[in-house]
Length: 233
Image (cartoon, rainbow, N blue to C red):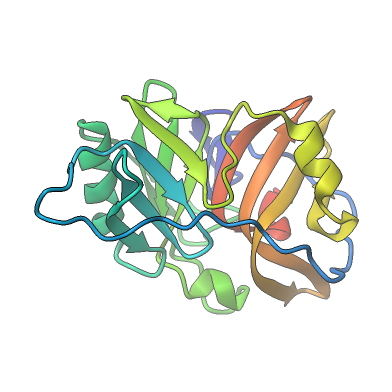
């Protein structure tokens, strides 16, 4: 499938929404820099505020937190996507728009997209990619794509504190070349900011984890779990 900007289109089925075009050569990974991760505080108690204040995207899960930084709920990417749909429905206070996507670059057999926001601002995609694809992809049951820094009063960021619309210059300047991927789009680059591991598919090696797309001087998209090869379509 293929993300088209904020609208679904078969070339990314990852995340559907205007994918970032065909890519140039993918660099061979070198030793990555360590990602600065936030430490979500304790589990909520009986006196805790259960109002969702933020959504945090990490290498292996998506979580909701209250204003005190306590984790209210966390859904791993290897869980049934319906669990993630329930989490985001509660967080945003609205039911998603559901779209069935035919097979494409990401998922040979097609998938389901659940989206919140007028422009598919936040979307979950069911993962049905065959096990013949990269191992990390076949082991996950859904993936997430984010185009906004906030939706319905809920702040959205990565585990290392990156949000859509953040300045990209400083972030990308700190990433080793092996963690940055130049797409064919003018001024468009993909960086793996939170590393889950490496993979080799079709002779091409790359990192996977939490990916951000830079368009011009700002972060435009957050995607997880994602790898360099996911932006070839």
